[in-house]
Image (cartoon, rainbow, N blue to C red; front, top):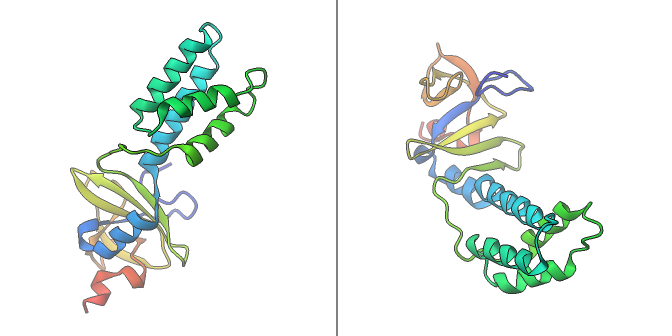
Length: 190
């Protein structure tokens, strides 16, 4: 699969500086799915499941590992959560363990000190247009993954191969997904 090309349509993604479309950047960060946080939570679920699957440690050692892991993840009330997990886990039937722990993480965990820089988001607007927020050299970039608007733009630098540079629209450039009209800052400024 070629980088920065929609695998279903074969149309290159468009990429624009998030600083040039602050309203879209805000919309993605406010209403999108934080992929960085979701990945963090999944790693935590995997670690907790691995702790619970150990058969060579005592329940006390298991509890202490759980409490430490949950506390280090920045979750409020690690002691009580670890205690509840130990009490609620059916160690004779671990088939649904990942799903069960995933529900606990989603519903019961209060992350009071989670911090990450340059978080990535995915967002689909009400019209089905798809965007992804990423970072390049500390600058926010928005990938238009799917759009109802196809434009011609200069090819991006080698840092984002195959994509169209929506900050530099050009009739002689490559066809790529462009910003939908409601987010197209060039159309709004003309």
